[in-house]
Image (spheres, rainbow, N blue to C red):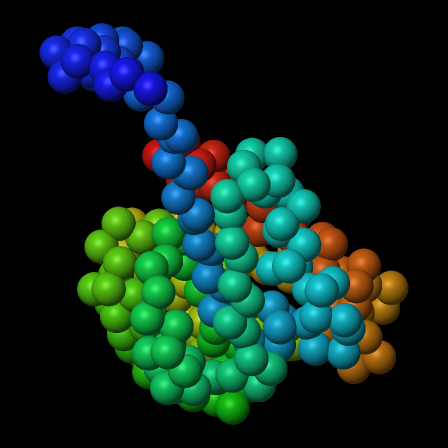
Length: 222
């Protein structure tokens, strides 16, 4: 077979190069970056007493799919966790980037009578560590109220207000009360009347989603 002249090959290469430039060389576009939502909570988010897949953090996936398939939800919640426990658990979850950090801790501290200022300090330390490793993270603080009547009205009031104050200080979004519409309802809780059942978790999901939806849409658009 007769070899093609080098001059012809050079010209063909130039034409191919120009054609590639016009159509972007038909390179596949980079896949959208996965957005990670980390839920860091206690039994109310871990799904104590129910299938973990029925806990509200895992139900988030169904809400997120119409927005984008490029969300990853990590439920890093642990039943019985206090804010101090959270400080010990946190470092291993900071090894990967976090786009949205949902913080739901504090009620177990209140059960044990931990001073509100200590609870606040622990939560603030968790927030600071997350922001230090993820400067562009969006924070969502999940508010709680003391679920049972207590003789220490001042403690109950300070505890309930603490979450909003932390949200304001850290420019975070606030879920006013996770158990809104669920607390005290026998139909929506386990036999202990404290932990939501599967039906209760669906309402918890809606309580969180009202705040999280615009944040998720904004993250997906970035």
